[in-house]
Length: 401
Image (cartoon, rainbow, N blue to C red; front, side, top):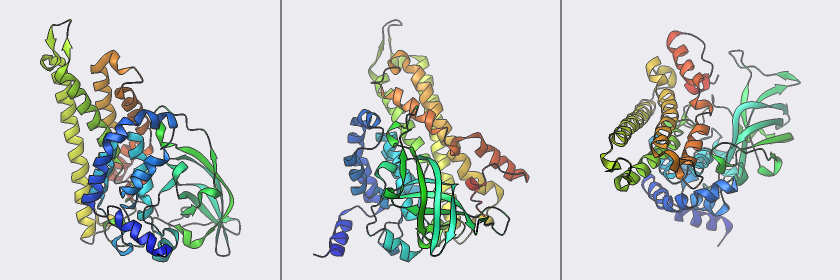
């Protein structure tokens, strides 16, 4: 059997539909939960966990059907990430980032050349922290980027950069610096061992440097120049599945405390936890918030998907439509933290030990909420867009030109 035939045979064994990928992710949850402490100690995903994700079809979720991929909708992608987060938050975060390969706006020839397998994973930072000088056939790239989640197991590393020609910064038609995403091999990157965070410890989100590396033109892309049509071509496509991580960890914490509450006895009051008003109220309120934020996430994703699939562009959206997914995404990230924090308080001193999953979930949600999509500038950008002001983070609105 030839190499190509072996690759094709291998790919046919990997789940390749929304239903089978979700089922495979569900099957991984018990092992991910069991190995969460190990993943955190490791400060990165163990190689066999990466291979389990690869074998479950997680990294191929965004590849179009024309390349043999499953082409999952944004809702389906989010549900898979949510399921993985129910097992382990760091795994879900790396999966959420690593599956971006199939969503990148590379041309078809580049995709076939760069990704002979659909089960590759990427890592890196997209904002233009680097400098790319135009040279014959491509660019000469240099810079330092932070938070390269999953970079220790990545097959490709992405790096956003502003382009220059003959020493002069390139500008777009609107007068903004020209921003392109460069794709390089991990061997061309120098890692900086500085990932010692509060939470999401297992993501291995180290900084990285690139020094004068040649990047062929065909290994670069811009969000404002889509190479596919439909809902997966819009500039905000990479952000849509992010709330899956928050939803999964919040659901895990809720189920954990519900199980404890069903059997625990309060000796000081002489009643079961199930009959304690404070326990009942806290769980009921947290469930209310979870249901609200989960419905908001999936409803806004479905509405956006339907509009884009029917031929609309983001510029056709009303201001209220355009801000929906960015706000429900932020609400999920902050909401998950709020739910976990209240449940942590309810469990009191039993939460403070490293052996308690509440400890890790609280640290994970605290760290997650510091990511730009969970920050105040997202709410500010929505308010500014509604009133004709200047958004601090227009990328969240899909404004990239």
